[in-house]
Length: 432
Image (cartoon, rainbow, N blue to C red; front, side, top):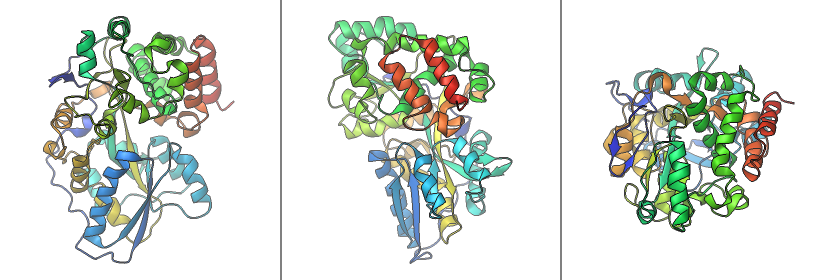
C-alpha cells in the first residue's frame, strides 16, 4: 500500500499531481500597465459561490486595478451547461467561462463556441503547467483552456476534538472507517458523517473514490470512456460498498432523508461550527467554508486520505478550466492574467484554493495546513485519475436532477438494490 507523508495532525493524500512539480520557468508577467483597458467591460461566469467566489473576486479586483477594465462575475450554479446554453443561443456568452468538466470543453469546442488559446495565456500554459494539466483544456488537438483552479477530491475532513472524545484515530482502510471509526463515534453519541446529498456532484465523488480504489485504474478508465457497462459487477460491488455508509441512518446527520436535503457547503457547517458530525468527505476546497464556519484549518479542521477500499487509497483530482468564448477586447489579457502565477498566488492567499501552476510558491497559501497540503503534492504517475463524472458527457455526469447526480441521490435515499441502480446508470449513460 502506498504511504503518504504526515503533515501535522492529519495525513494528507494529495498525490494528485504530476501537475505541481516545479518546472523552473519564470512566472508570466500578467496584465500590462495601469489603465491600458480603461473603459473595457468584461464578463466572467463560473460555478463558484460563497467563500470560493470571494477569493476569485479578489483576483478580478486586482486585474481591474492593474488594467482599468471592469469585470463582472456571475455564478452559473451547479449546472454550468444549463447556464451557458441559453447565453450561447442568444449570442450573449460570457467573455470567459470556467468549465468544471473537460467534457464541456469538448462539447463547446466541437460546436465552435470557444476561442483557441493564444498569446501570453498559451505561453503560461506551455511553460508553467505540466503536460497532464495541459491536456485537460484541449480538444481534437487544439488547446482552448487553462486549468485555473485545481481540486484534490480524495480527502475526508474531520474534527480532531470529536475523534479525541471518542478515542479514535484516522482510519487507513474503508473497513476501519466504517467498522471502527464510525461505530465508535456513534457509540460515543457523535454522528460520524455530514452528507452533502442535495449537491449531487458530491455523491459522484464518493462513488469515484470507492470505485478507483476497489476496481482499479484500468476499469475506471474503461467506465469513463464508455468501454465498460455500468451494469458491470465492479460497479455493483462499489455501490454495495457505498451502502455500508449510505444504508445506515445513524451514520449521517438527519439520516438518509436529511443527507439528501443537505447541500454543499451546508454539510461543512454541520461539522465545523454546528458540531453535528465528525467527518465530511470532500475536496481540499472544504478549507474555505470550514474557515468561514469559525474553524482554524490545520488545527480544528484537518483531513486524512480517503481510505483504501482495495489495495491502495484513491487519488482523484478535478478542476475548473478557463476558456474564452468571445474575441472582445481585453479577453486575451484576462486569460493571461488568470493563468499566471501572480494571479494564482493572490488567489491562494484567500484560502480554499490549490493551483496547478508550477510557479505558484508554496508560501503563497494563507495557512500552514494548506502550505503543507501543497508541499506534499506528489507525482502519482499512472495512479492519478481525473474526476470520472467530469469526463463523461455533462448530460450524464454533471446535470442537476438527472444522470449520475439524480441516480446516486435516489441510491442515497434507498441503497437496497445496487443492481437496479447500476441498470439506471447504464440507461442514463446510453441516453435511454
